[in-house]
Image 1 (spheres, rainbow, N blue to C red):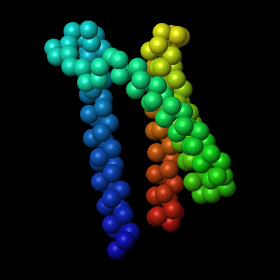
Image 2: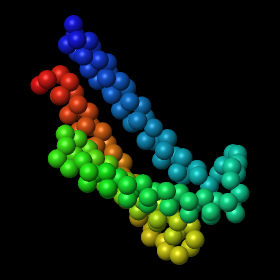
Image 3: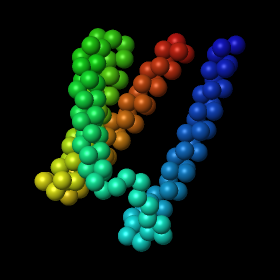
Image 4: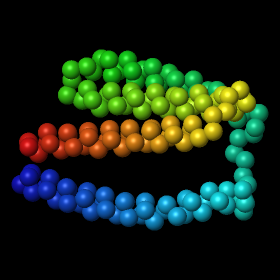
Length: 147
């Protein structure tokens, strides 16, 4: 009975995956058009005043750096465990996010500007998260299904 339920869940997740990929591919042209039209906003709403934005940027950077430090410590504690690779990849992703936030703070305060650096780090960050979730899901399904 439990194998039948697991099989049905797998079939549903494959279907959901195909739907997600289909709609993601549909969004690519929309994103490209949005980038072109980014300078022409219909509505321009400010949620945070510029004076608080600088302070918030520093707070976010500090939180990201602390999260990366703790993720690295957690990965060190999990060495040899079943999810060792997962925690190592999460530590790498946290480090990339911290690097992205440090770059954002430095750019925001007009100290350093590296054109395209943020996009490269965002790409790596997304890839690391995707690989981590995919491989962890595969490992857990294998363990659950007993294969």
